[in-house]
Image (tube, rainbow, N blue to C red; front, side, top):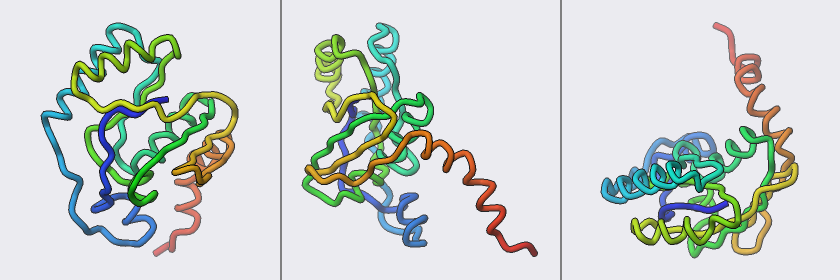
Length: 169
């Protein structure tokens, strides 16, 4: 599992702020259209070369949500280890633009890394796919460890639960 793009210390106007704190404020993530173009070009090139097993955008909800969606869609867990010099909340839930989570066979790492460098897209390996659990640690501290099946059940039943708990007018 690897991350394309740069993650910045941004939480403004994020789903995290809206869901956890009930706020819809703060500066929106900075958009760099040139970096976006390089990322898209890189993803298209690697897809055409069949070097990627998967690619997923990082948007609403940030990296943590993208990782959970990947795990739920594939039915396979992952062990993710991240390092950051800023807030874990911004790392996991910030909606910095111009990023994607990718997976690839270990034999493809050199080619993927070389292609990213050639396009000027930041690249870093953040973990490995496998198992039944999604585990995420930041700066050596375990922050998340859950069975993929439980994540999927929560996601699939979220709408029904919200309707059941809503006040009827």
